Image: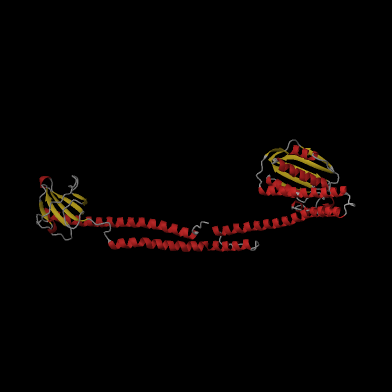
Length: 447
């Protein structure tokens, strides 16, 4: 499997690359600024040297050899291009070729690479014009133009600072990422041990409520749900094995008795007992498949379903041991799965029929704003308040109903509540409104 770099490595590399890019750009900007400052200083120095020469010309004390206080090279050229005066290094050289100052100004600054002068190929030039017309004279002060790195020490410090700053940022980011991810490593190690050994343990939860703290909180909540799911699964498997073992044991017993004494066995009774146990086994398997389908996929096809019509069909589908009456205030329709809702009503009506003394009443109505309500009421002994939630647990049978519940699997009410919740509804067990003994199941479904 392809292994990706650790988060701290990726974060550190990203920070280092960004820092390297930014520091390189900053270094280039600073070197450019240093060069511009050097050029500006050189230009000011050339301007001062040129002004001294202009002052000497105006005072008529200019010699043919111009002695500069600095290292500037100078020439004085007339309008015809003749060199009138020059510094020692410029004597004997052709006149400086540089555009004259504009008419509105007596000075021009710039850089030229077409000047015949010693020391460089390109020069910084400051040109002064003295006089007007045919008497105009041009004073040129020039120096070799500075290179890309006019100050080597400053340039070296700036360039060496790029990898130094990059390294410091990378190290700081590595330390910060390692410290931030340390609780995550602890959570991961603990989670590996929990999933391998004991689901009752929980990952360490930091005191601060940052992203890592919220992650630990979510993991512990997930472990809570996982522990509950595993507990339900183990209990479900245990109950299933018990429920399947009983009819299978009964089938085996009937077959062994028939084989042990074939002449004495009443084959009709034996086959009837086998058929009853087979029906019970099929009912358990059918309910288990229904539960499995509900848990695997609740996105079943939904369509308009008339609950009144569906209740009538379920009541008339087969004979009942008690009188079942359907009362409706007109058509009560919802959006849902027809097969699932039919199973829900069948389970509730069958349950009420098994426990009722004489009659079962099914009442359908609509409550504002848009809730369909179905009540299934029987006149049996009822169920104690402390047991009313237990009846919705899987494979639960209460002792007081055992004599009438032989045909049940203990899954009908659990399936009914799951179907109601899959339709964003609810199913509860409560007292009868008329305060007489009996059970009253109330189903609410959004329309």
